[in-house]
Length: 326
Image 1: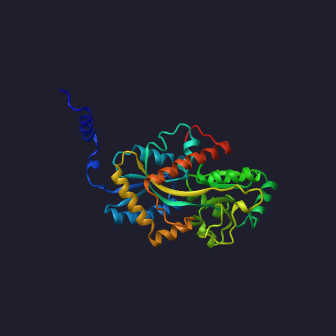
Image 2: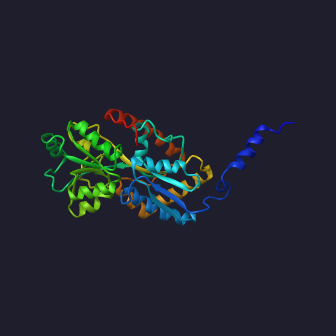
Image 3: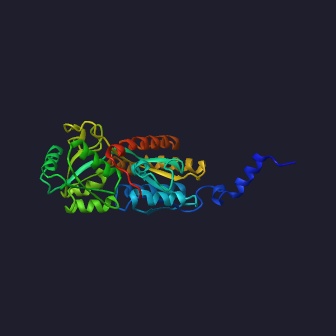
């Protein structure tokens, strides 16, 4: 008599499962891979989170930066990892890449397990070098119209949310801006501070040191309303005439390879939610524009990610962006 085929498949699956899947998770240090260069907003948040998770999980949580290709290099590395202890600190770039690159080496939804939202969607801030002779967004647009194609803006890479914010401003304001992509936010910020590029969208957290010492000036924020985490005098981009539909946000979240057991995903989610509610984390996240700690379940974060992929597909299409190779 042939053995029960269902039971046989279960036995084979158990025999082929990696050793870590049968043990209490984690069994060794956990690695969080960053898609962008160290020194940016994601790096600041990831290192704070890693400290909290190290304490709660009982194993070291290590940060490793793998910048390049708008996050695709890091994302593929996590997708191909097999140790069961490698995670991805992801961002809006993950949602953008799904439509920007038609030949990704992974499926942006199917191949990953959503773990937790880390920083809820918050506004970006438009900053200009202090030497630029403009005091508000209207004056910036007037300058761009007088000098088409010469006003440069930095981003963390082609297709990054910082790039799309600049493209949206260029299209909706009817001006030609010069895009200068970098391999991460940190080197872009350095050149903004030095005046090599004239403007940039980024988080208030990343821009704060340069605002304090007077190297850059803030002009506007990208939310649909003025954020309580930002100066009350800082207007939204949408408050400028003809830019009423302008809205774009930044967020961070944790993904794991789809093979990570659901029990480990649940434990990670609970540890993240607890960490994000601690006062020092809340303070840093507020500077990113996150008014409340992220409290999403893995399922809720997965639904959010799916919706973001759909939303950005329309933005990418409207901007006419399409890249064959990462």
